[in-house]
Image (cartoon, rainbow, N blue to C red; front, side):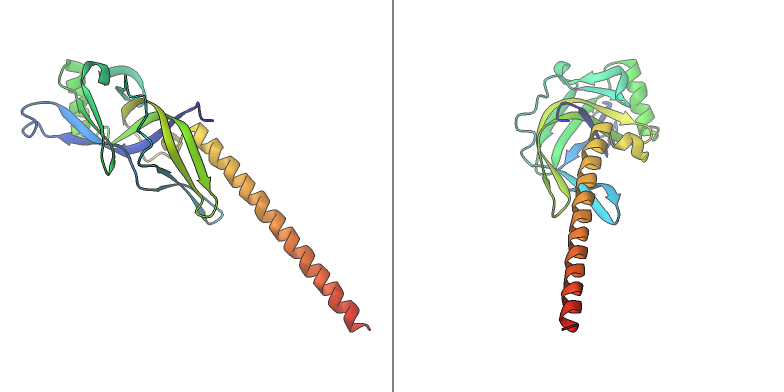
Length: 203
């Protein structure tokens, strides 16, 4: 599962051209260090959080900016049009969409709200799971592939990738099995105690 590409939703903000000296910039946090709920099952919230040092060794050598993680490339880190930095909040990105006509068109689409959110694609190099809090902590992000303007951020099928669903489905199945075993053990103990009481009552 650690080699699979993951996708997470983030905020995107247009930098007004007057503020950016007539440039065409968008910016936002591709990831923050706050926990977020990914699933709820049987009254239990399953969460995920990115560790504050998860990006210390991340490969960000050639990150691209796209629409919905596919198709044309509008900017990339290797040509200096995407700036990435990690601060106390998370992984910040600033993207220059002013160098080509198609990139300027995308800026205008974002400006009018056609692409209201951002998503980023990455691989997980190391993680751990806390059963008490039902929280997965991503300790190391292996590679950051792209940041994308997305058209349907509210759709859970686009917000959560297959590998993450598989991960938490496995966790949920395991915890259900544990709860079932605990319930069976409790019922056996109660049944045994009832039999003991019955035998004592018959003496």
